[in-house]
Amino acid sequence: MIEALLVSQILLWILFLGVALALFALARQIGVLHERVAPLGALMMDGAVEVGDPAPVLELEDIAGRRVTIGGRRHDGRSQLLLFVSPNCPICKKLLGVARSFLRSERRHLELVLVGDGPRDEQEALIRRHRLEEAVWLATPEIGMRFQVGKLPYAILIDENGILRSKGLVNSREHLESLLVAKETGYASIQQYLDERMSKPPAEQAPASQG
Image (cartoon, rainbow, N blue to C red; front, side, top):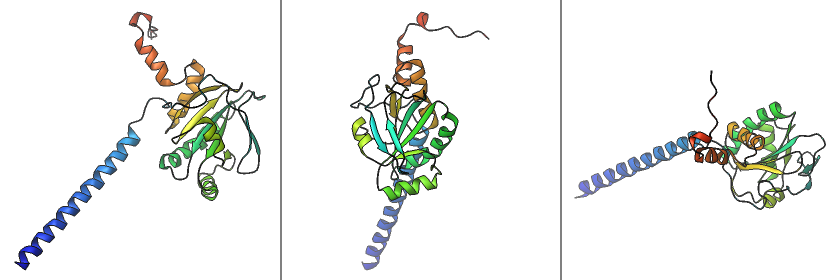
């Protein structure tokens, strides 16, 4: 009797461990699929400041003590890209390496402003880890509250005249570039451009170029 009970307990533990391993493998696969499957452009969310509206003008101090102006007309003719990140966001950490490269390649016509969330010491550690000392980094929740940013990583593009031109959730360089493309084409997002193009009859769509 005792032997049968012992065997049943062992079998139950083996079954439990098997189910636990299966759940772990399934969670890992879901995570991999989440990283691989992404929208074509930055996913927009509703907020207090809509695309086409003037962005609020904010006078702030970055984490290095430099004065920074968010919004308003810029004399250097550059647009301003706000990228909202957090030390507790795995996708944000992955995106910061992309942000460093993006900062270097687009600096002539774009100012990248990183807006951090969370404990200041963790944000400073993130800056050192990703070598972003030269970037503008704001460690204040005020900006996120003004733009009603609810999920991260999130990006907002403000043009040289202080107008919000595009915004959305981002997780890759392609998503960041989609915000610039949206500004250049006059659409609020890549999704809007594709939706409008697909809704047109074939005769109204631009013909393919002949090689």
